[in-house]
Length: 370
Image (cartoon, rainbow, N blue to C red):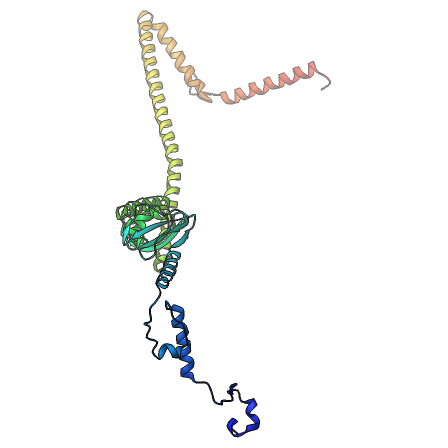
């Protein structure tokens, strides 16, 4: 049942007004009333309801000058608030004013720059950054080698880092590639794999720094760490075989050198000994020949003085020499065909045995207790 059809429910009608008039409120009238209140708020004068304002009061709607001042202050405050920023202790900032870089850098702390006019580029100038790099390239002896390294760097010049190069890190990567290829391409593979790793890192670091200085990147290279240097994984087995063969070669050469070091001095010693013996034999023979010649000359002189005596003496000396080197002597006896045998060796043994028995008898006599 509608609210208008039941008189008993008039008191329950939410749209009923004090004057007894029924029905919902007029929305157009409410909107005009609200609009009039806003006009009175921002206008310079006049008051009244919206009906009188709209019906022909004759006054022109104007905005107050204070409104512009307030709005301008609010806008300026918001604009200024966006220009406040803080730099960390490790940072410096480059200011671009209307696209032109300013000479002075912003120091750490609370700073302000006009927004839109200035563009602030903060840069960390103390952090040590790392750039890993891997490459495969040819060495001077036409071998393929794989190198893994890490470039450690920091920003030394914030202004050059921001302005001179669009992408300083990319430029550093290109400089690393170029420096590595130059150093590896002028080195032998064996030297790089063994003791040349530290030298490789120092040379690459020096060349990288030279390149980034020419590019004006503002980067200072702190260290180049060589992680690994070796052949590619695809040929690792073959390379290991080659290395093993080289090690075997070195081992065989060392063994041969050790054998040569042992045999050659011994052979030289033997050769020197034979030379010394030959020299001694030569000197001995020469000395003997010289002595025999001198003795013969002296015998000749003696023979010329007394031939008979010298002849007999020579005969006796010859017999003595012969008999001393012979154990048996055959003596021809005059007046027959008999030959006398003198066993000198047996006679000498008998004499020795007789001397020994005599010595024993003498000892027993001197010491009867034994």
